[in-house]
Length: 270
Image (cartoon, rainbow, N blue to C red; front, side):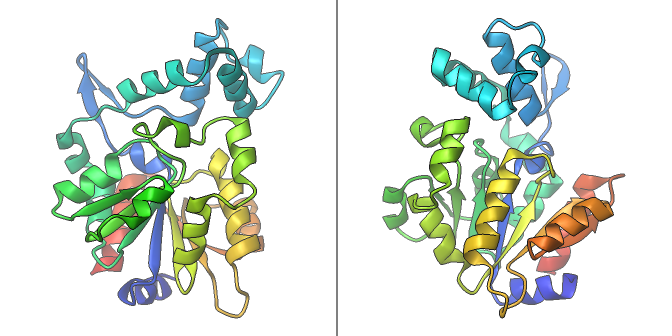
């Protein structure tokens, strides 16, 4: 499987699609303690706290995390939550340079296109810090910008474009028609190429959406696998469900997950 990925990379046909797990590799000190960007669960917990609930479980007993965020949006708008997120992900350049995963991503010079569902700017900053000129694409008008060394498509928006952020239940439902300009861009970029999912957990709310898109709209049974995922020590449970979606699974050790991902990415580029 790794040999196939190396062949795709060498041919310029591999598209990294980066999730929140990669952002956790960026660590820095704040008020004397080490911090990282919030997890999805921490984001939902913060929303519940801002809504006045001491325990998020009180809300989660009544609905899903996406519904909690939808309730927050309807009650308060998303600005209080996104403002908190902006503060929480404000990492210095040194922390991004020290992330072995982001250094390895920047070293994928054979990949002219990167996708991410992350709202932070770690990937584009890493590319710039390691000497690559990067074009950020968040909305349709960005697609006509002058060509750069590579493009980073912010598939669920970012903090500079809060109206484009996909965060709550209604946002996901609106994207499920697969007619958004970024959906069309992904379909175009997938023609003759293969996605490599990096930093996605099985419980990530983006996973079902993205995998459904790959399977229903992009997989061509006659052209081989159109997607692979790096996953920490997958059980038969995960393997069966990924295989049913025609997604190849590459196992990474849980003991040193970050270096395992970075090592595999570096082997692709070697």
